[in-house]
Image (cartoon, rainbow, N blue to C red; front, side, top):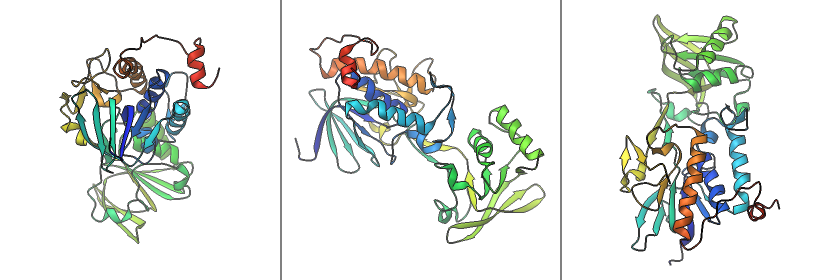
Length: 342
């Protein structure tokens, strides 16, 4: 083993909700995990794109924000001592003759593991940049592609562009704290939830927001600080005063190096079975939005189910001589001791 090599039971690629819950399920079976994620924090899309946006379909939580869910999952995994590696991309995955794997990152780290779990959501994702000249100089200063803290937009003249759920949701959520808010969309039809659209139109009718049909033409400002946005409309051009711009043009999902690992893919997703959620390579599992199988639903709760079944199979690979005894956390003293609650 080289000096820079880490030996572990499982390497999880992706630190979103499903990857975080996998730590817990694997931990209950005494499997130690290292987690690698390209983002600078845990939580995946939940923490990156909608940390303060409510989620309504997590069992047992009528409403919970992306960040709250992430925080809870991290706390739930704590008893098992996972090791996180953020701002890293997995660049190499090699299967050895003994069935184990060598995982390498773009930081030169090397992990030797018996099981690899790919929980990378849609792969590495980045927002689609509007085709606006010079927008790069404003990014991170007055142009943002996600809302990490709502308070950053308080008392700002805010311009939101888009017609999907993100654009409509943030129009509704930020309107109460913004100095002014304008929503721009190229047409008077939306891809968002009808209830959100109705609420937006009510705000516009009451004069609490402005709704403009058009597309971004150009930006004006100095030193990365936005002052106004030129909107191309059917009647010509309209100049809107704005200090913050939120363009929601969707995300570009890229599998990245995953596509080169010799796994069976279906429409840029990883094909798995529905017994163990194992890929075409024994010992490599894919759970969450990254996988594909008949009847797949891209829901967080589905990913949780997949993590539980994957963990049972992983145990058999890491400790083939140990009998897997199914236990419940509500009644097993052994599991409760692991969790520190007995």
